Image (cartoon, rainbow, N blue to C red; front, side, top):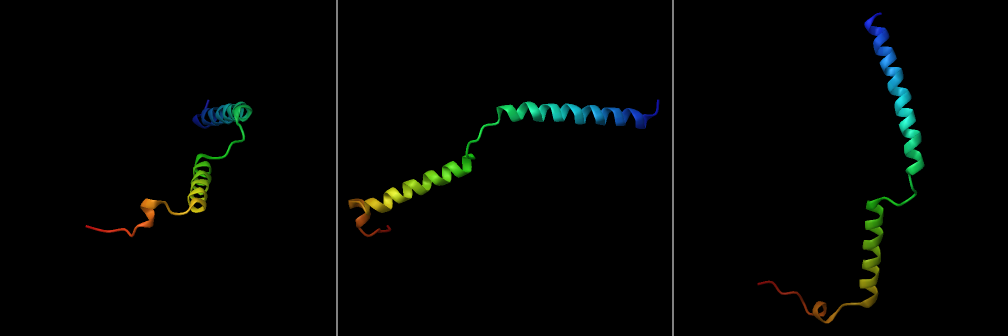
Length: 66
């Protein structure tokens, strides 16, 4: 048995196992937005809420530095 044959068999077994794992993983995959997108839309909602309410009493004063 040559070393090339051993490598070919190993590669074929690896490809078969990885395909099997991908099929099994696809059963558990859910459709949900990515974390980055969820955080982004949450920040947009907070920003819209802040813009709608207008400036508060503390924000109405001019900002002073020391």
